[in-house]
Amino acid sequence: MEPSDAEAVYAVSLAAFHDLDLRLGGRPEPPGRGSGAAHRVGRFLRTDPGGAWVAERGGEIVGGALAIVRDGVWGLSLLVVRPDAQSSGTGRELLARAYEYGNGARGRIVLASRDPRALRAFARLGLELHPAVSARGTVSRPAPGDAVRPGTADDLPFTEAVDRAVRGAAHGEDILAMLEAGARLRVLPERGYALMRDAELRLLAAFEEDAAATLLRGCLAEVEGREASVDFITSAQNWAVGPCMDAGLELHADGGPVFLGGDVGPFAPYLPSGAYL
Image 1: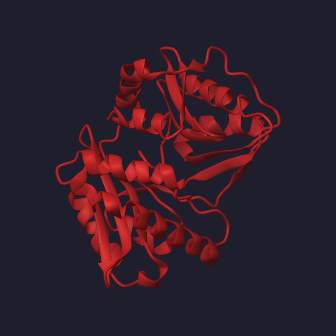
Image 2: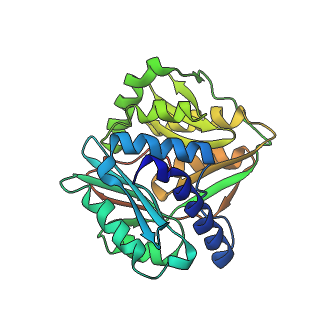
């Protein structure tokens, strides 16, 4: 993948997820905003060029994959194939190259869509499947998150400590990249942190479940009256169910599962980032 491919990869993402929605109904994992998607491609080309791949057919880009490695943990950030090129082996070849980039990694993370073909491919990697639900709706009964404050770049060392405790690897400057793309950092001092973009929870990590629940309540309270969403709630994140329901959100089983392999820490209490894992 090259920097000039970013726009084409984003176009493929839009087409692929729209097609998934038409085929399966409901709400697939969204590809993100155009500017944010281009920002992600540019960043990963700088930090993880070996994990960034495209597939071409007739001189046109028909697929793309982005994989990253942080502190020895590999993650698949994106795998998309244009609908007219699907079921042709394109996705399999892209996944193989992205997966190979993680050779030697001690842990692996994939946040999947509901596409049966993708689920089959990820399961064949030998990763453990963790079904997940999403919570979304209008925040109508927000509970305050005591002591939750806005975060800054100065909080990066703290986020790294929390990350290593809950998933075995720090996001590092990926947090700064998310802030540059419009996310807001929220910190519960000495206990955890979260990232919001608009009314969507993009990432939450804490040292213990009570802190995670407090953070989630604080994030939801600041978007009262808006349509909010919280994704990738697995059975290990049961602590998130109460705060979501208390805020008036509804649970939906139309999201994709989480696949984990190797050493990724307890992966709890943790709600991962769709882009940065």
